[in-house]
Each structure stands twice: as structure tokens, then as C-alpha cells.
Length: 337
Image (tube, rainbow, N blue to C red; front, top):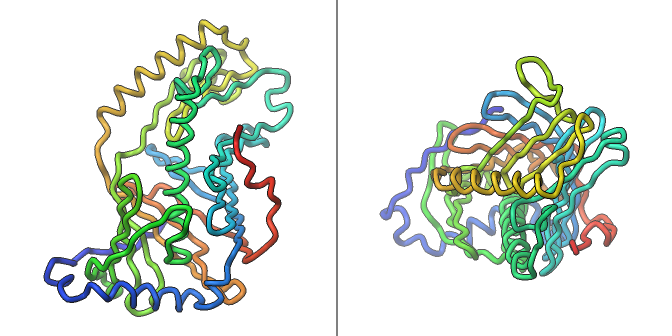
């Protein structure tokens, strides 16, 4: 993955007397993205693929889809896990005030075996009772995560604030790189949302979005129930616990489904290790680079999104097809029960 290096040079002296510049920068950016045609966008769908790079350097590629009906419907469909020729998908997003959080399981996934997917302790996992308060708290957290993702996606597409997650803009100065200069727009919103949008001073197109947050939590546990060489357990032959936006437990065909007591013990252990790991997380910089702009019905849209965490490239999404104002099946935005 090739990413643009941008050095921030903005300071108080650059911001003084430039408070009104934010409106011009945003107007110029929206004009460059399509002007009136951009403003006429009501629905958008995109299909493509995402290549992810793990901490150990291994790479994987999976399909992904986006659908949005502005101003308050959004869903992203991504691959949660690959198992041979089959995949498990997660649909995450929102429809107004309703959260979308569904896992799609293909039929006959384990060839007669069983598979259980759970989120995390307190979220209705097997062996646990989820209270109305716990469900409401979980839904609120998932909703905020989805709305922030929506904002980060649409800032590079529209440079606008939407009813689903209103944001405010202010001019923060200029940044420069070997390739030129960029305007820096500070973006703030609910739940301590704070980011900086970089806009190319020459083309007026968005370059990247940066923000600070805790580094992602990743936990894994594998067991060798007849697994592969060196104690490795191929997926489908044992169980894996993973965290990072949720917890999944997979029971493969090589063993029997866990009992309720075993599941309770597993989840308690996972929860304890999660809390210990969360306490050690540090705050790092996240970046999304918008590039490969192509015109779709007169609207210039980024067809490549590159992401990095703490300076390390982590994933690259390439949209093979983006449609403007298509008719979207209402079921696509079905709210989770």
C-alpha cells in the first residue's frame, strides 16, 4: 500500500484572521466533487474488496459493500471470516434511530458441525441473559460506532454534515507535503468526535482524514483439537476467540458444541482478558486516505480508501462499482431486533 505523507505545519498564526475560510474551502471542495450533481445525491451503493494487512505482515482480501440513503440510512457489509469457499458476513449500520448489527451465516457451513457466534460478555451470548439495560447500552455503542464510520466515509465523498451524525467545521490552517499544500479543516461532533480533514489546495479534492483514538483491541485464542502442524489449529477444526469491534467464538466440526457451563467459563475468561488488554491500550493516530477519484454521473468519488494506524498501513478498499441514486431494497436497512 502506498500512502501520502503529509506534514502538518498549521499554527495559531496561520489560523488568525482565517475563520471565514472554512466556508470557501468546503464550497470549493463540493464544487470539485460535483456541485449541484453532488447535492442531488440521495442514495449510493458501492461494491468492492478490501485488502487487510495483519500485525504479522500477512495479507487477506475480502468482498465489501456499502449502501446509504441520505441523510439517515447506512449499512456496510463486510466479511467477518472466511472458511474455504464460504464466508461469514457482518452487516453494520443504522436506519434512523435503529441499529443494524447482523451476522450472515451461509448454510451447511461446517458440514454437519455447529457454529456459534457471540459478541461479548453481557451482549446476549449463550449462557448469558441480556437485560434490557444491557441491550440498550450495547445498541447505543454500536450505533455510535456506525455513525462515526458513516461520517468518516461521507466526509471524503461529500464534505458535508448529515442529519444522521451532525458535525461542525472550522479552519485549522494549512499542511504541506512534497507534492503541495492542503487546507486543514477541523471536524467535531457528538461523543467526542474530533478529526482533521485535509483538502488539496490545488485540486480542492479531499486527501485524507486523521483522528486520535485508542489502538484497536485484538485478542485471539486457539486450541489444537486435531489441529495442524506446530499446534496451529486450522479454522473449522477448533475454536477461535477474536476481539476487535466484537467477539466471536467458533466451534468447528472437529469437536462437540460447548456446554452452557463451558461457554460461561470461556466468556468470563475472555471478558477478564479483554479488560486487562483494554487497560494497556495507548492512544494512536488513525488515517483514511481518499484517492483514485472517478466521475460517476457527474460526481467525483474516491474509489480507493487506504487506512493506517499509528503510521502503519492496515487496509485498502477498492470500489469496483459505485452507483448514484439507485433504488435500494428497504430490507437492506432492516433494523436488528
